[in-house]
Length: 440
Image (cartoon, rainbow, N blue to C red):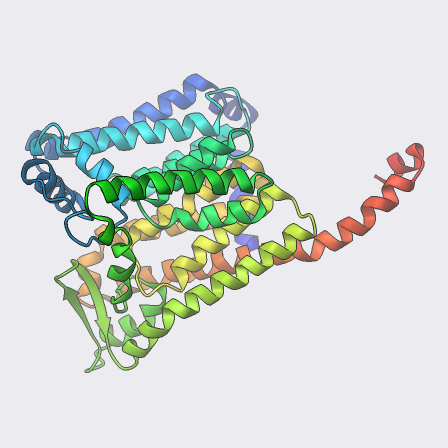
């Protein structure tokens, strides 16, 4: 894997001459790239916008918005809901101009938050090292556009970028943004856990997160829906193995090869494709404890590395990527938008050090491309047992496992290297200045 990445990296280096690199680091070039990409998105969505239709998950979002805005029946307040209550903010906001403009307002929200993320990565054009991150984020956004433009992850992913970038300089703002993102979709909680584990400003982060969460809970209580505040947790526990989850892949192969008691079927209640076969019930029941065991093991690695004074920024990003990766690889549920949980962390890491993050960066681009090929392009053939579509899904899920393995190994290396670094530091401080320079 490292050899392949090195070859691709070498080709990119030859392609991007010094002049081209300098051009890509100009604010005007980045702004033009951002506007061009989102103009392409808008043109692609224009037929849908002009006819007042919606795509992806937006038909469901629009129905929920109409129920609340027109009939006063709110998901998460008047009934149990699959999402945290904060998700209703963007869902309802996109409906304030009426159902016919829902797709347009959702696109504008996504584009605005993408713009804020690009601005944060580059410190609004002042941080040259952030341009690589910004271009990487735009490329990944293009590859994952079918889900990024049409699902809630398209909003939470740029929020996580902003939270990670602002953490060192403005921890209160960063913690508030990450907490808000978590109340929209649960996955940023993994990033929040990494922040609390290693950040020197953890008290500020925890207090800010608690204040924001208390405000959310108080608002729901005043609206009379406090009994449904944590309903999204129980709504997820009853699900079985979903088609795209990495753990489900062996049973998808059995179904495709005609195993008579293994089938792919639609769960109409939650509009997903699931797989049933020998042992699927047992595996589904085991995956949640296995997932939390993996998360606990990663958490222990992070604590050890932190106590041995590993590099805080690197540990935070690697820990976030490992926690989120474990949440995907060991989850019985799998969806294409989950890839947008990983990309923000990798994008921030790319801006920190390309040499360190080039392997996960290349892996994520391949994973993103394969994800879009699986859904929506070859999704229907996959359901019908098409072998090529299944090979695409298998390759994508295999790369997810490879990415998690790389991340855990990188975390372990931080743990192994930290004691040696701690032992060398006092010796270096004891050397005469001239000798210290020679040895360094």
